[in-house]
Image 1 (cartoon, rainbow, N blue to C red):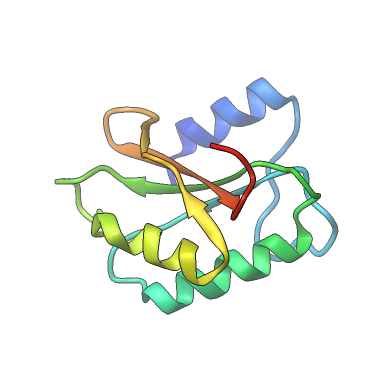
Image 2: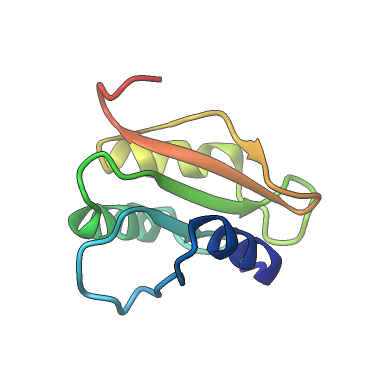
Length: 110
Protein backbone atom coordinates (compact mmCIF):
# COMPACT_ATOMS: atom_id res chain seq x y z
CA UNK A 1 0.00 0.00 0.00
CA UNK A 2 0.95 3.62 -0.29
CA UNK A 3 1.02 5.40 3.07
CA UNK A 4 0.32 8.80 1.48
CA UNK A 5 -2.93 7.48 0.00
CA UNK A 6 -3.90 5.86 3.29
CA UNK A 7 -3.17 9.07 5.21
CA UNK A 8 -5.14 11.10 2.66
CA UNK A 9 -8.18 8.85 3.03
CA UNK A 10 -7.95 9.02 6.82
CA UNK A 11 -7.65 12.80 6.67
CA UNK A 12 -10.71 13.19 4.43
CA UNK A 13 -12.87 10.70 6.37
CA UNK A 14 -11.63 11.59 9.84
CA UNK A 15 -11.42 7.85 10.57
CA UNK A 16 -8.58 5.36 10.85
CA UNK A 17 -8.59 2.60 8.26
CA UNK A 18 -8.84 -0.94 9.62
CA UNK A 19 -7.11 -4.04 8.27
CA UNK A 20 -8.41 -7.37 7.04
CA UNK A 21 -8.53 -8.76 10.58
CA UNK A 22 -11.30 -6.32 11.57
CA UNK A 23 -14.44 -8.40 12.12
CA UNK A 24 -17.27 -5.86 12.33
CA UNK A 25 -19.30 -4.13 9.61
CA UNK A 26 -17.46 -1.47 7.62
CA UNK A 27 -18.64 1.66 5.78
CA UNK A 28 -16.41 1.02 2.76
CA UNK A 29 -13.72 -1.31 1.46
CA UNK A 30 -10.31 -0.63 -0.05
CA UNK A 31 -8.33 -3.61 -1.37
CA UNK A 32 -4.70 -3.13 -2.41
CA UNK A 33 -3.86 -5.59 -5.22
CA UNK A 34 -0.71 -6.37 -7.17
CA UNK A 35 0.18 -8.65 -10.05
CA UNK A 36 1.37 -12.05 -8.98
CA UNK A 37 -1.56 -12.48 -6.61
CA UNK A 38 -3.92 -15.11 -7.98
CA UNK A 39 -7.07 -13.82 -9.73
CA UNK A 40 -9.13 -16.44 -7.88
CA UNK A 41 -7.70 -15.14 -4.61
CA UNK A 42 -8.86 -11.65 -5.56
CA UNK A 43 -12.37 -13.00 -6.19
CA UNK A 44 -12.31 -14.65 -2.76
CA UNK A 45 -11.05 -11.42 -1.17
CA UNK A 46 -13.83 -9.43 -2.82
CA UNK A 47 -16.51 -11.87 -1.65
CA UNK A 48 -15.13 -11.89 1.91
CA UNK A 49 -15.05 -8.09 1.99
CA UNK A 50 -18.61 -7.78 0.67
CA UNK A 51 -19.75 -9.89 3.63
CA UNK A 52 -18.73 -7.12 6.08
CA UNK A 53 -19.55 -4.13 3.86
CA UNK A 54 -22.60 -2.07 4.83
CA UNK A 55 -25.14 -2.10 2.00
CA UNK A 56 -24.39 0.64 -0.48
CA UNK A 57 -20.89 1.25 0.87
CA UNK A 58 -18.13 2.02 -1.63
CA UNK A 59 -15.75 -0.75 -2.72
CA UNK A 60 -12.41 0.14 -4.30
CA UNK A 61 -9.53 -1.99 -5.60
CA UNK A 62 -6.23 -0.08 -5.73
CA UNK A 63 -3.50 -1.28 -8.06
CA UNK A 64 -0.15 -0.05 -9.31
CA UNK A 65 -0.55 1.80 -12.62
CA UNK A 66 0.34 0.01 -15.87
CA UNK A 67 4.09 0.03 -16.37
CA UNK A 68 4.76 0.13 -12.61
CA UNK A 69 6.10 -2.88 -10.73
CA UNK A 70 3.23 -5.10 -9.62
CA UNK A 71 0.67 -3.70 -12.08
CA UNK A 72 -1.90 -6.43 -12.80
CA UNK A 73 -3.31 -7.08 -16.26
CA UNK A 74 -6.35 -4.93 -17.04
CA UNK A 75 -8.55 -8.02 -17.15
CA UNK A 76 -7.54 -9.27 -13.69
CA UNK A 77 -9.77 -6.86 -11.76
CA UNK A 78 -12.62 -7.15 -14.29
CA UNK A 79 -12.62 -10.96 -14.21
CA UNK A 80 -12.36 -11.19 -10.43
CA UNK A 81 -15.18 -8.66 -10.05
CA UNK A 82 -17.46 -10.58 -12.43
CA UNK A 83 -16.75 -13.85 -10.63
CA UNK A 84 -17.77 -12.10 -7.40
CA UNK A 85 -21.00 -10.67 -8.82
CA UNK A 86 -19.61 -7.17 -9.23
CA UNK A 87 -18.98 -4.71 -12.06
CA UNK A 88 -15.62 -2.97 -12.35
CA UNK A 89 -15.59 0.69 -13.41
CA UNK A 90 -12.89 2.37 -15.48
CA UNK A 91 -9.70 2.88 -13.45
CA UNK A 92 -9.19 6.32 -11.94
CA UNK A 93 -5.82 7.88 -11.19
CA UNK A 94 -4.97 8.33 -7.49
CA UNK A 95 -1.42 9.54 -7.96
CA UNK A 96 1.51 8.94 -10.28
CA UNK A 97 1.86 5.30 -9.16
CA UNK A 98 -1.64 4.08 -8.24
CA UNK A 99 -5.04 3.58 -9.89
CA UNK A 100 -8.36 2.86 -8.21
CA UNK A 101 -11.20 0.77 -9.64
CA UNK A 102 -14.68 1.12 -8.14
CA UNK A 103 -16.66 -2.10 -7.84
CA UNK A 104 -20.44 -2.24 -7.63
CA UNK A 105 -22.88 -5.10 -7.36
CA UNK A 106 -24.51 -5.99 -10.68
CA UNK A 107 -27.42 -3.64 -11.38
CA UNK A 108 -26.25 -0.88 -8.99
CA UNK A 109 -25.88 2.06 -11.38
CA UNK A 110 -22.83 3.24 -13.27
